[in-house]
Image: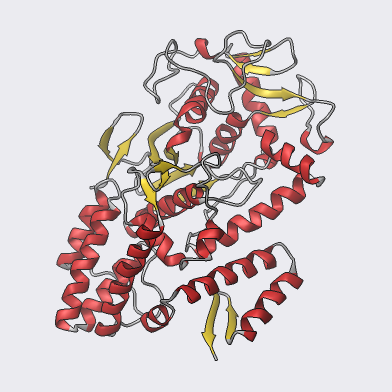
Length: 456
């Protein structure tokens, strides 16, 4: 029986879906004004793993991961670049998809953009106003009256007196209380018309928190199973989502809240101010994308993830050992797990214990040792099939091991850059990268499954 650590309950709980054998999961996605960083990579890979495990466990899962394409940072960056909001956000949506594809991340079933759901946001704000939880402030903003929602603070576990306005919570003179947060921002003269919508409260745009509440309830219903995201979103974003959704719909919002841990760099929290901030594509210039995915999954999703070259180098060597076992065992391409086999039973027990990928991967190494000793094709096939459940070990072992050097990691990074250029319709840049690789003796072969390469 699957158990999940529920942030709301502060305990590991048996998972029981609202509808038998059906899971509805929402994960907070990216704000698209820049390239994705390692923290984004962890969110994408972790919840891709969760999605895969539910499917492997026989559930019918609907996975929604949103795109925030209207936000203060987006507006500022577009103005700095002298480009439209749509042009900026589309460029970074394409780059995000290229990064996610490189990491083997399955596309969500729904990827709603905030700008597509403004009518739903306005409808929810009107309900909150009717329920006495929202008010029009003197400055023209519509705010949420935090102290009027009895359950505020239940996710973060803090009292109203202890709470402080967190990231993206603005304190303005128009608020009745410093903890109140904005639902609808009045239009400003210095902002582009493309970020202004008509409403009963005047022209303006939505606040950040209302976006996820509206998209989640529209696509998954007013009450659904799982809501996920990074630990930094627990307060204020997820706390505010609960207040909005339950305040508007007068019912429970989400049953299980999942939060993945922070990414640290050489034991310090990753941040631009410390100069230890890495984008996914920067890392992929140095390391194979599957190595990065393996590195992320090798740690339990709730634990801190400490990034360093030494840890990535160690992950590369470890993944080499698994692929070497597949090579020696001559595994077939068939990827059907025998769930009655002893290693699979232990693998499943680990995954059912709050998605303990660290323990599950330890089982893979024990199975790999068995493959090396026995040279069993059946054992190798089981290793390959179990790895595939995590989105690992799906390549030809000889191809992976042949590409073990740092030069090959750079090739993978260039291919990812070419894919990003193609998605951005920058075909001249994509062709330049292809020709440069060809000049170095690397031939690219495009197919529906992706881009493979070989040396000539």
